[in-house]
Length: 120
Image (cartoon, one colour):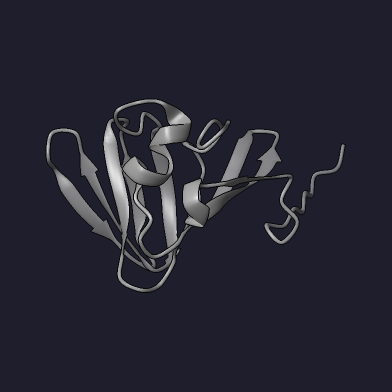
């Protein structure tokens, strides 16, 4: 087994589109689990564009992620809210909604919550 691994989001192993063409999730599967790159287009909101796929009232995936570009607001079921932007690391527990802010797509990397995210 090689001690070096190289994978690219330019050729992901799986792509999961969000509803209404509002973005996608690209996945590469590492030995330790999947890593995802999500592109949330302007106007994307979890409750509109992923909830119909997930079938839950709020996102039940935990996330450990890094924002590459754009802005994203996450609001917990209890009303706590945080905005993330380029360079921010986020840790988000299950039970939240999220949406893009502004006219730029938000691009996030996630090491924890994307294994079943938007999986049909």
